[in-house]
Length: 226
Image (cartoon, rainbow, N blue to C red; front, top):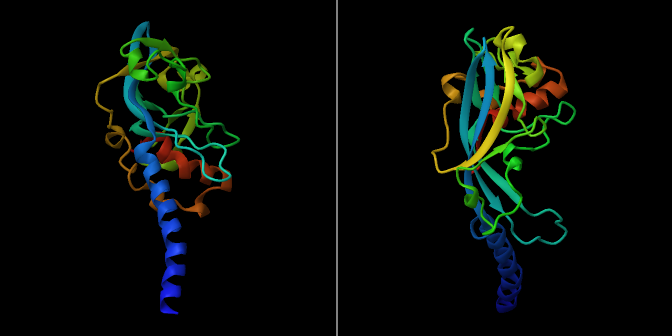
């Protein structure tokens, strides 16, 4: 009887452990590409160019689907939003991805401006070649009138940048380029609450949609999936 129980346990336990191990190994053994890109955002203020840039790392995972899964791949991201400080002292942040005000986020990043394919299957083949980023792929721009208060966040767009950067401020364009430069990490020097915000977020302070937006705000300003 004891042998039978052990056999039954093994029949249940071993497949479970195998499935768990397979799921755990997906992020290790099914990485198909890993690269860094540099986003450069260009403005003009008082007839003078103003540029800011940041480097983000992306790791592409494409494991086989399990059971009923239909979309098994994902992209892990590490990086910070790009701070842009205007001569009037105000700083905006070009987020890591596009925000749709109806759905909080649509997961579109500026790396979509890179070619879909390459001769080697790796993005590093495009090393140091610049590609234009359309306004559809340009991540959302946000501004904090009070940098100490995350609830003061304002969403804006390139056409309205003069409302923050000054009457002569204008968005020019943006480019993306595969690079081997280190990942940029500097948002906390502008927004000291970045690492503790989610744990202190209070649903009672804002209406539900804004709460959802604020809850995801840190992942738009900083990602550390890797």
